[in-house]
Image (cartoon, rainbow, N blue to C red):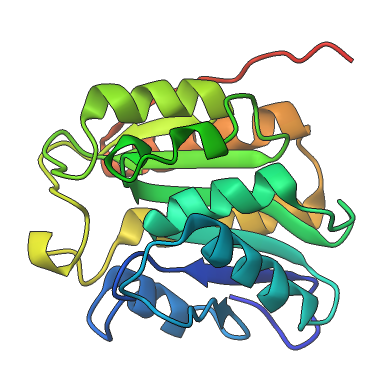
Length: 217
């Protein structure tokens, strides 16, 4: 994915209990040299602020880069919290985000801690119609709040090992296209994620919807 010194890198943000060696996040990480995984102190305790803080600490320990964050489940919520409170300069931080099967924040009583506005970065949210951790309707709603382009994988469960996703080509395709667009900087911030998701969805025969909102400045 990245050559040594490439300013675009991948940040892997797992959910509860981490992502094991056969999980698609681990598969993607192996395919993205120089990627970094966020390591939580206790993977079994969903402490949103602590998990969000660890994302910031992980980034601070690395050389300046433009990061593509790839989050799953509760890791998506931690990423959203980090983005809502981050102080990292825009030139060096998370430039785009791939959110796969976010957990429902209402299950943890933390919805008020999450942003309900457009993120200000390119983002794609991938969900399924049979995810026990988040209904499709709620996933669509959060995508609208965050201005994320939405991809529906259909009957894909929680998009993890248990649902048969040891590899997730859609995720790799999105990451590669995000990286290419970040390097080239040819597409505006408002349109980049939508273009990426629509191209990937077309490649895999999926459905993608644009939930991009204009923000008054």
